[in-house]
Length: 237
Ligand SMILES: NC(=O)c1ccc[n+]([C@@H]2O[C@H](COP(=O)([O-])OP(=O)(O)OC[C@H]3O[C@@H](n4cnc5c(N)ncnc54)[C@H](OP(=O)(O)O)[C@@H]3O)[C@@H](O)[C@H]2O)c1
Image: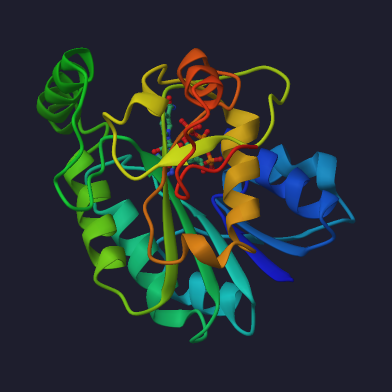
């Protein structure tokens, strides 16, 4: 697949580059000019396009003729970075291309997610403090996702739980709503979040879905599997 990775130099981005190469995809990565060096380990194996991820000219050039785009959506700054990035990808990827976006559990598609109290507090504090420090704006990531959800393109929005580093535990499992028992452990290895993003490119069942993911080795996922009640939406790795 001719694949583009927008936000390739971040932690998630670099894991996605590795998984994509492992699967034989041809990769072009977009990252900020100052971060190009973070992709040195892939020199000669990928093409790097330096530029802001919300620069429409950069994204236009990057996604021309590609089959799939993996986009890291981050709410950093207070200038609509996530919204600008998502909109450019939605506007310029060819019709029919697979578009997979990353975000966190805090994004809700239909308002039916049920959040742990601790997560609600965390989001409330972050939502209040981050824009005041001009550090980040969760509303920007929410607006980006609203636009994706309303788009007729072939999108998937992958909602990550709390992330941790460490070796792969396998493809995460997922469910439609935060609050579903399978997700209760709220932890995923970042390397496996990336694996899910790359695998989603070739999983048409995930088109127009916003899967909330958790490690397949997390206690809640293991308990769900042991109960032997895996409904069709819950995919084991
Ligand atoms: N961190 C978590 O616990 C967590 C939990 C759930 C979901 N997620 C989701 O996972 C994805 C990746 O998050 P991550 O925390 O693992 O981070 P990450 O992969 O390191 O990605 C951060 C990205 O943001 C860019 N960035 C950082 N500061 C920036 C700035 N001031 N202006 C513009 N771009 C900036 C980085 O670009 P450079 O490489 O150029 O610096 C990089 O592409 C996101 O979609 C996030 O919502 C994260």
